[in-house]
Length: 102
Image (cartoon, rainbow, N blue to C red; front, side, top):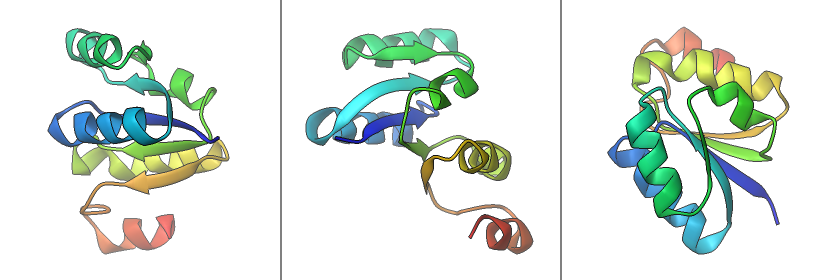
């Protein structure tokens, strides 16, 4: 089974975490907000990280649910780490960045 993770634990990230927890193998969540990420990690009995790059070492697939302005950088880091990536909409603020990701 694929090991899944979520980067960003706002409302959409929490939804991704819930779905992975119920239907897949959620192995971790990451967010700069240490209180929020701890809460979500404990809710789903999974590891939690303030540094998403540490999460990337342990997953096969990752949902990117950070603010849109960060989608490009975080997604490229995940892609460059060899991970499958699901990006919340909109893919990026700028078409050229979205095209680079695709």
